[in-house]
Image (cartoon, rainbow, N blue to C red; front, side, top):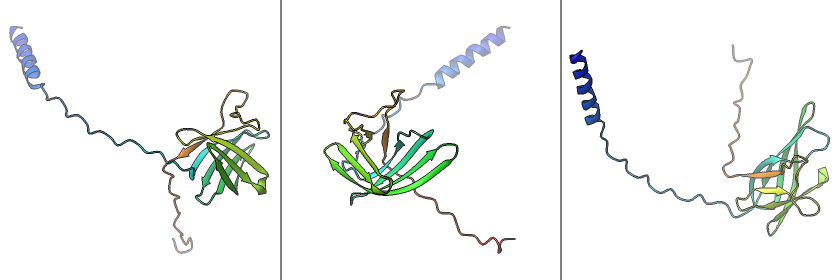
Length: 156
């Protein structure tokens, strides 16, 4: 029994003696993330919908004031449309006009570049649950994956 206690004491001394490590070096300071100042870019979010379960939208606002909106409307099925239009910026407000869909929307930009949908009175649009409809700025859009063209007759 004494041998067992003696071995345990020696083991503890070895672990304590070997466990001393130097303090880790401090990490280098990171560069602050720079947010784009312009409005052009990619946005994604949810828009209000009266006759559907959900209406999701992805917007691309180009430097030439053109806009492409890909909206997905979810009812009993999903319907995706690509709409083309224009936008104009007046201070912190952005007006989006899509003539083919008779859609005129106004947004207010925040300090991060995200945009909240505005009502006709100029207040931020909220649904009955208090949820705001916002378009979130996507700083690094994903690249579209292209599928390779294959000849099914040649593969056997």
